[in-house]
Image (cartoon, helix red, strand yellow):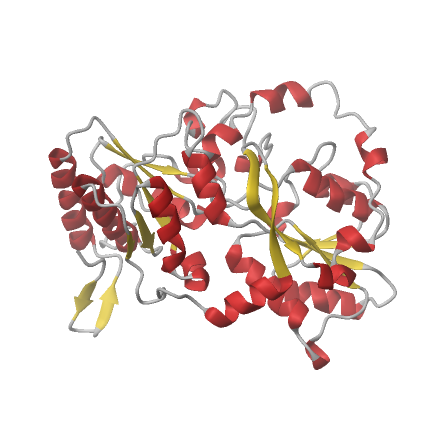
Amino acid sequence: MNAARHDPATDRLQFRDPARARELSARLHQLAAEIDAPSVQVMHVCGSHEQAIARFGLRSLLPPKIDVIMGPGCPVCVTAAPEVDEAVALSRQGVWITTYGDMLRVPGTVQSLADAQAAGGRVRVVYSITQAVEWARAHPEDEVVFFASGFETTAVTTAAALLATGDDAPPANFSVLSAHKYIPPAMELVAQMPGSRIDGYLAAGHAATITGWELFEAVVERQGVPVVVAGFEPLDILAALVKVVELIRDGAARVENMYPRCVSRQGNLRAQEQLWRVFTPRSGTWRGIAEIPDGNLRLRDEWAHRDARRRFQIDLGGLWSETLGPDAMPLAEQCLCGDIMTGIASPLDCPLYGKECRPDAPVGACMVSSEGTCKIWHQYGGRPDLSPVALGDSP
């Protein structure tokens, strides 16, 4: 079943057609009735998917039997506290830390980057690694570090910036502190966690634009559940859900690409070549989840001169000797971000959600980032009433 409807009057594909959304919803209700199981659990691993699902009220179109949950698809949320600590320590040592705005309020062990900035640390928000390079070029007397977060999609841009030559090459005072993550290993580990039951996946279309959909065949083979690559418009997501539920009903474990206008089997080979020239997978901790084999992307040895971890002596001992304060730790211990990011709990299960933990006073990383489940649910709601206006109807 295709996602979009073609509009002959404009010769364009329509991705926010309420009539088409109702057709896809009806198909999901039909499929749910054909599945002899009390529930079907589909996990997506993308903050952009969660934003669209919540913003457009798509859960209100689903039959009660079909539960769509968000997995560890927020790179800011899974950035480990020690990684934040490294950036905080460098900023306090006089190094400029440039990073995305979402990273500022992510809690470290002792401080966030926003705390460090308020205390005099050198922190600057940028919208791209290109801006970070420009800042380094404009301040040749200072060391400038780009605190890099994100999955494969943004890791490619980091790699491209480091590989640039000539006038575009980063200056000598520029380096990278990589907190980049690699999503496929996390999908497999989450499926094996106690309390987790995943019948199928929606894969992120933008990441698959880089990696290609063939990458997920290994996940399917090992887990025996289908994976469907999905785009980000409302009809993209609904059509992908129809496809994955059809596969679940039929017991067919395979990969389907429902985002063919952007994603191919092989992906962007040039981008992949650049990614793996600069980065290599390493085991590392994802905040609130676990140690994930090959889940972190670190700079290769030949890029040691651009690697902030090897370029600087990062003093974490002095930072960790500080205390958090009497009230911070009990709240942090109650935070359910880890269970929320593995699909075991929802934001509504957390005793802090919407009370002690709010966007203006976040306790956990899921309430910090615009791609965090708690932040998204606080903004849009988890199962709001479907708004015809949001899907494109006239008021």
